[in-house]
Length: 100
Image 1 (cartoon, rainbow, N blue to C red):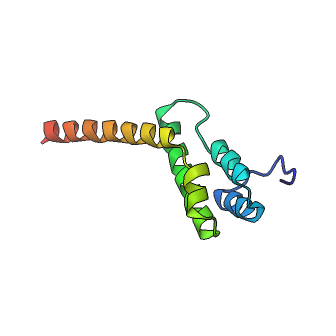
Image 2 (tube, rainbow, N blue to C red):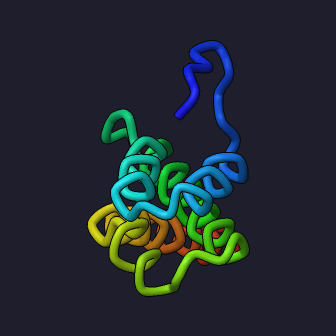
Image 3 (tube, one colour):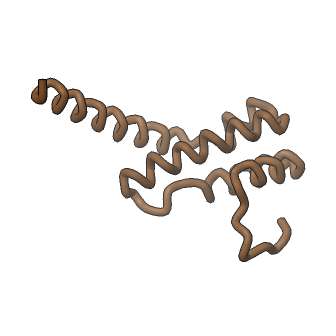
């Protein structure tokens, strides 16, 4: 990867680079870089979203679905994010029921 320390790669640029590289470990590394920097709930949800967008862009760039599923998917992060979103939804429903 070219040394562009001051330039942050967009998700689309990452996906294009990975597709051109054609290396599953490059895909894995870039996917992990999009992961959470800490366990803050907002960061977990945002990271899961970034990784989802990355998988979509990889697919559009022509990366094989098997490689995407094996090297660009973090099941633990997805599970954490879904759990947080479910809890938020339940809390919102409680407030909606009590407010009516």
